Length: 284
Length: 258
Image (tube, rainbow over all chains, first blue to last red; front, side, top):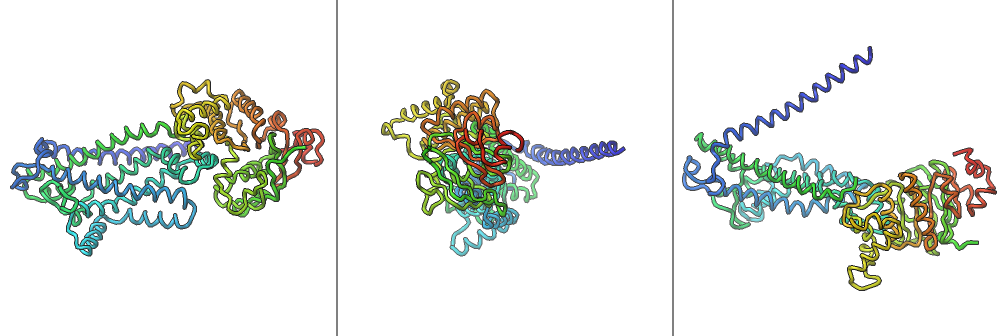
């Protein structure tokens, strides 16, 4: 009789697991479906090759090239800047401070920062800008986004490096390597695919965030031409176009969202291919 | 009589609050194979990992006492741990190649120690010769000479262990620590490693941890017998195997306990 109960339990839990997976995949499909269904008809060559002309937000000609280029500059710059800080932090946490209380405090702080709403980063960046007397600019946007991306990147790298078998590190130490040599020559190679995932996660959050660039990078209908000038971004382009009363412009908002999704998809595919190459030497 | 290469003096080790070694004093003779034997959990591996100061890389470990390597205490003040590990190499129970090519694995130690230019200044082909030499010494050259730049992870376990041996030898250590080096290998590969170790002892002092009494009988010139973290008996293999002083040693080598 007990075996019968176990079988029923198994069936129920299996159904629940399949059900929740289906629910998540279903919602994702619904979101993507809506974006494609409303956005695709509005998407044309002008959208991705033109900047907004006069009356664009009333439904006249032009495109969102300003936002595409702005977003790539903002998220690309922020990811590069964040990477410069994240990699040393993650290596420090894992290789040098692995078992100290200090590392646990740092991880807790990063986890809290991860959960902080991006509007707070935006407001914080804005206060600093006021204090320093700089205007909304590409540079301010990049710095704010970099701070937003930092906890995601560090924690993803931290987890990836934590998976390195201790015997592998010891193999390097036993040859007389220092911690730094082991970190740079062994751990970075072993964890390259995981580190790349961390970079991609951070880039994804950076390019999709509207609130932190609203005050810091501002918005402009022109292409960004200086670090000290304002820069447009795709999430804000979606926001502004969706806020107009014209259905044609609202459809362009969906088209902009589609472009944003396509950029993230393309980046995921590229990084998967790269991760495959990086994984060539990984020891399992 | 023998010339001691390593003198272990009142060595104690703890994991957290548990004491794993309770004051070991023993010699490791130069250019011989010294086997550390004893039942599971007696501290064999702990003792071995004290000899290249690798134990301190693990969590909450503590060591006291002295390990004299050619008259220098490796636990003395101001000792550079990376230099100790350059002089005392190690072969682990399970082979862990580094995440790089076969060639780079062997060249790794030379590169980090800047030894690649020892014979012939700035000549990149010199490193090629060094890599070939040590792959031959480990008995792996014939099997990998056509794929030196392939990932080391693609080798079989037996080949990986020989690669790890080549990698350790390339640093030219005076002492080679072997922690159950054949435990993950098939009998043929294991025999290969044993033959390499016997060939190596001419110029290298070898310390071997093994739970296989037969392996100790085949290879060892000198024995350190541990029991629950204590040294029971140490001396030439002949003496330990045939005329041991202690009751526990006699019972262990006869296969009655452990």
